Image (cartoon, rainbow, N blue to C red; front, side, top):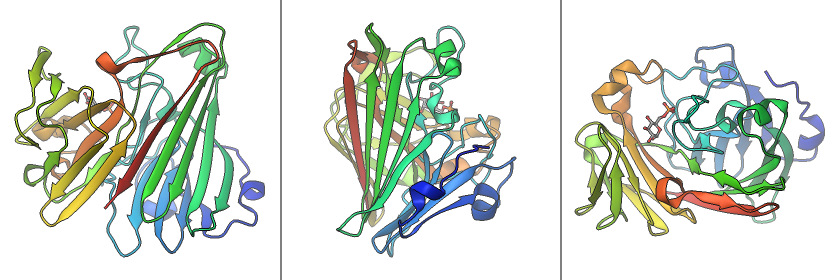
Length: 298
Ligand SMILES: O=P(O)(O)OC[C@H]1O[C@H](O)[C@H](O)[C@@H](O)[C@@H]1O
């Protein structure tokens, strides 16, 4: 568990408090510290480990994010659901380092919290290089993640390369969206785009019409437009991002082999992950910084 003292940062901020995963979610594991953010426009729950959003509820609405009923809250293990931050690399690593990078399983620092004049709440978390990160990724860096909770959830990730060489960089906001049943939803905003189907032998295909799910799905859409919409009956969720890729994932029945999902729960989410991955991978020049934004709204 993080040893951070939040009292100075949270002094004079209304509607933000610290709790634990055990008190808030009653789920298994050693437990993790969480920040709860509540205002008149919406509410959110953020794990300090991973700067990981676990819940976002616009006032009077329902949670946009899915958290697995079998989620495990353990130090150094990514929680299943919400918005894991996959960085500074997305997917598997050629030398067997943790899949999707170390950001999602490392404690971040709470930099600031403030009530904005329009009623929203802004939280800023950061992560800098350390001996532990340099052993996996030999660069000096600063990641700064700004979360604004209102009727929409506004996210902004700034990645600064503080080293004197250029750095390869891929990332994704790996969002798990709560939906009724994965076979009932339609994802718009990806029709006619090139994608890589990563199930089995990678294949490059072109999306015909909107995306629907009929079973295990794992696809990387390239050069996507700013907005996708998940249409779930009369409900819809809008995803707007500056990122150039969209990864669409649901494990289907393979979820029975994933301990923190299980054989039924997989039906209640789809992942539509915005990031810059595969052909959209980035290189950050020495001293350069990159900002990625994403806004989620119902
Ligand atoms: O189990 P994780 O490491 O969290 O990865 C979960 C999933 O993330 C992404 O969606 C990838 O495209 C999938 O291939 C992967 O299975």
